[in-house]
Structures are given as structure tokens and as C-alpha cells.
Image 1: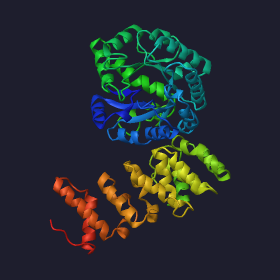
Image 2 (image 1 turned 60 degrees about the horizontal axis):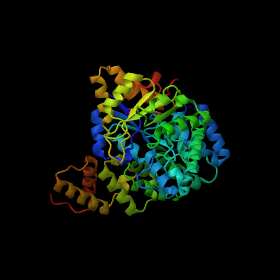
Image 3 (image 1 turned 90 degrees about the vertical axis):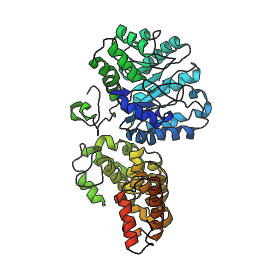
Image 4 (image 1 turned 120 degrees about the horizontal axis):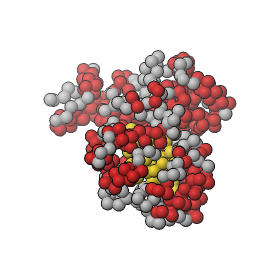
Length: 283
Length: 205
């Protein structure tokens, strides 16, 4: 089973996790920029973090044979702190980096006017830099947050096929499935989704445009729940090909739209399209 | 390394017009490099250049961009290193000997040597490391041994290796022996050469 975890915060994880992930079949990850638990109070705190996402963390991952990419953004929670607002001015240079495959995590936390502004501004950056967008949906008042996010996405003019709405569940999947956006699901030990519930959603809605991630971070979470979901799919009668689609080909297709997904140099090479060294989804 | 060799080695890149345009624009306006430098890997490739051992296409293209600057070399080098991802930082470090900047790039070497990213540590110990003072250079060589960077990456190794470096290597060898761990073969060979050359006292084993 080869696994591409499209959302995991490796900065918060240990080398033990990298070893266990590699042994479980994880060969590629995307690490979205998000908050760190402790609120930041100045722009330099963000740029050091972003530098790590395009510098040290890919090096660390590479030591375990795992290819690391990132998404970069000012997250919705810290978008509310005026001291952090000028992070937006720093984003364009990061959005030109090879390892950056989307703008994210953007979206809503508490649905404030500040979050509206920062969300819209960053969707415009995604369009300007020809990148997909990775949208975090709020944990509180989620259904209305998803609806409001979809309205902002539609207003931005970005191609919905280049947007993923993440942290969906049984209550929000139907809001997104007919919009053309991708559906992201985070599998957690006791919040968000679980492997058995994820299998039920895959049975009901199919495997198309679905991304399954561990979203593992500094909270109680588990980087092997992608693998556990794949195994639960097989037990429920899904084929190896179905599992490969959900856990590998779908994230490759979604983030490949950046033109920057690079899975060469190792045993992933056979996955490149038509011998191109850089994956270009759809072309 | 010379600019001419870099140019020749890059003749076969996938998009030579893009690179030629970039070099022209950078020559005309140094601030244009901010736009082209990050994209070089996507446009020129990341493969090793067969005619230029130790250089990849993106590194060579980025070094050429820096060499095409007519003014503000020091300012651009500092900015591109500070704002670069790991591959960009590495390209800046490798380009330093080609640029008319004297010893102004030394702070970047010291920054790279402080990291634990072996690609950056190795790139910092090329020919430009002649500007490092002996103490910083010895520490950097010892760090190579410590983190597993082959000593072949270190320019002028035999010319600069001295008794003090030998003493430091011998102490590391003693620690490794006490821990039951091996020294890298290239470090042991260097230590043996320094001992044979009378740079330091033969050690008791």
C-alpha cells in the first residue's frame, strides 16, 4: 500500500513517526502551514516557520525516504491578530518556491470580518500564482462555515477543481460534493473522522475527488490513520485499486495541478506522467 | 569553476530561451533576479550535469544568474540566500567563488555551517571557504565528519589541514572508539596523513 498523506504537520512529529510512517507505506506528504498551538505575535515567527517548511523539514523527511511538500498561508485563526496581518505581504515569495504546491490552510475559524478579508485575499493569491487552494473548514458551526467558504470560493473565480475543502464529515459532505471542489477528510483518534466512518462515506459517495489525511499535529492525533483507513477499506470490500486511488492517485492528481509535485529520484519514479520529472496533473 | 563552463554545460537544458531571457533581464536590472531565481529548478531541471561533476542544472542556472548581475552582487546574494529554500541557498553558496564580492559572503557560509542540513554544510566548504578563518574552517571540517558529509566536499583539505585539526580529529576518534562506533574512513585517512606528516604526535591505541 503506497500512501500520500495530503495533510500532516510533520514539524510537530518526531523521527519515530517518520520511521513508522515509512514502514507503513507513506512515501509522500504535504504539510500545510497552520498555527502552532501557541499564538505567534510577529511576522518573523511566521517566516522562520515557512522557511522550515521549504528547508529543514523536507530534509528531515528525505532521510526516511519520504517526499515532503508544503502549502503556505496565513491561517484563519491568526488572521484575526493585527500583529500577524502583514504575513500576507511575505506570502508571494514563498508561493514561488518549488516545494510549495498550494495556498493553505486558508478559510474560517470563527467567521470574523478579518477572516473574510484574509481568506479572499489568499484565494486571489492562489489564482495569481497558479496554485491550488487548501481550505480548512471550521470546527465550530461547521456546516455554515462550509457554506460560507463555498460562497467565498465561488466569488474568487478560482476553478473549483483546484480547491479542497478539508475536515469534512457526514454533516458537510453533501454541501461540497456537487460543487466541483475536492473533499478532504481528516481521520483522528477521537474527533473529526474515524476509519470506519470514512469507509461508510466512501461507500455512499465513491472515491472520486476524495482526499484522506491524518492531519496529525501537536494534538492527539495519529500519522498512521491513513494506513488504517486503507486497511478498513479492504476489509469492507474495496479493491487494492480503490485504496490506491484514494491514498495515492487522488492526492497526486490534486496537488499535481501545481505543476510542482516532484516524486522523482526514488522508487516513486514510475509514477511520473509521460516521463516528465515534475508531475503536472491533467496535462 | 568558471562562467564559461557553466554556460557550456547548460546548453542542453529543456528551455534554453527562458534561461537566456532571464540572464539578459538580470544583466539589465538586478532586481529581476528575484523573479527568475526561484523558478530555475522548474524551468532548467534538477538533473546532474554530465559535463560538470558536482553540479545540477538548477544550481548551474542559478549561479549563472548571479554571475550575470552587473551591480549589487552582495545585496542580491544576501537576499536570495536569506529568502531561499534549501536548493536556492545551496546554489548561492556554490556561486560565491564566481562573484566579485571579496569576503562579503562569509556570514552566509557561517549560517550554512550552523545548520544540520548536510547539503548546505557540504556546499559551504567549496573553494569560497578559503575566506573562513582557521578556527571556523576546522570546526566545519569536524562537523562534516560528525554529520557524515564526505571530506571530498572540502576544498583545499590537505593544504589547510593542520596540527590543531589533527588534535580535534584524534579526540573524536577516541570518543568514537570508547563508544564502540566507527570513524568515517576518509576522516581516519586524513588523521593518518596528518600523523605521518609529523603534524601531531602518534596516538596511543
